[in-house]
Image (cartoon, rainbow, N blue to C red):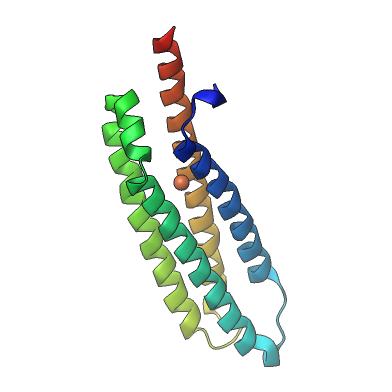
Length: 153
Ligand SMILES: [Fe+2]
């Protein structure tokens, strides 16, 4: 069935893998113990890491929204329309949540401060949401190509 997938679908799946690696690095960086004097450096680097991640995510979402993926999914299976709209709305929610996290992190004044567990919780939740979102996209791709494959017989 893979042979039937378009370049764009394959590229999206590849990017999902790259994003997964970035997510892993974020979680690692978040758990790493940080001494008092290293806090400022850690915070700045962590903010930058999240910014890079946001940038990658935005580009990835733009690829999905404007790179021909939506058109492909609709051409093969027009009933995908509402599901695609839902997924698109999630893109914006994910970016908004990430922006709130970055702001909260910038306001953090020490690693052991009371606000940190909440930020950590928000990051973990966001990454889980993103994983579920991508799994839903994968499912959409699979079911759409399955239908295409069936229709071609
Ligand atoms: Fe995606």
